[in-house]
Amino acid sequence: MTNIRDIAKMAGVSVTTVSRVINNQPYVTQEKKEAVLNAIKISNYQKNINAVHLRTGKTFLMGVVLPFSNHPYFSLLIKGISDEALKHNYKLILFQTNYQESKEIEAFNMLKHKLIDAVIICSRSCDWSIIADYINYGPIVLCEDGRGKKVASTFVDHYKSFSTALDYLYEKGHTRVGYCIGRRSGTNSERRELAYKDFLKKINEPYRSDYIFDDCLNFEDGEQVVKSIKHMDNPPAALLVTSDQVAAGIVTCCQNENISIPDELSLIGFDNEPIAKFMNITTIDIPLVEIGRKLFLQTFDDRKTLHEEIMVQLIERKTV
Image 1 (cartoon, one colour):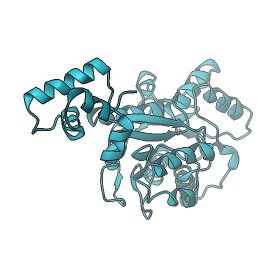
Image 2: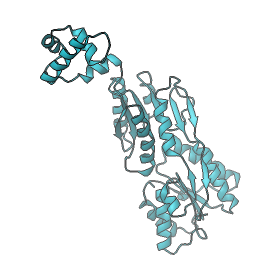
Image 3: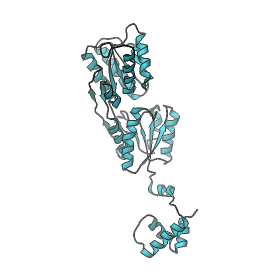
């Protein structure tokens, strides 16, 4: 394979001159520049990108950790991240983990070995103690409340958003309230659970574990929620559903089962996805594309403890 020294020999110039021509630097006569370009053309020389990366200290590759790539929540985050990546001439490496710690650690090790410039964590299973071992190797940005940790973060206060939705349902006369969630573990899920327990204490209602439905991620999971509710002696009269996709599944199944919404079951979804608007589902609007943009931009910020809370709002439609 032709290298820079071969080009210099063919063109009858120094290695320094070849380097200046390749990198579009000044102080090269037109005659020497043409000789170098001609040698490059004849030899089909290709610039060594790895050498460029070593010189600049950048790969222009960004690692993005997410559990699933086919879920609308993460698709919208990726859209925001990729829009900014395109503006800054970055490419993305997606680490689809299915919440496996080993897959997340692969991303951190690539950061450690300078194969990527930063890591954005859309949702994680790794304990903070594992992440802390890698924070000195490059920027790590969390899509969760990272206050108190030595990383940047863009986040929604899920305690606050859950409390807002619960209080809204209570104002509508609901005390038998349950919720659907993707997984019980994780910082965001823990904040939601705390808000739920505090809400029950405030209205003097007992905590019922059967009012919490987990593993709810997709449209089809909504059908399983409705089936469970139908077999309960004292089912919840209202549900917070942390995915509009699941909420849409619940609405569709209720229609098939002749369960009236909102008369027999009220719903509040999350994310304000297009399907929520199409099916008139009350939802908490979370600007996921904007969050994705901010996550990307935070990788360039030297303030590792920069945390930005994103405000949300309730969009009332026909399911409450």
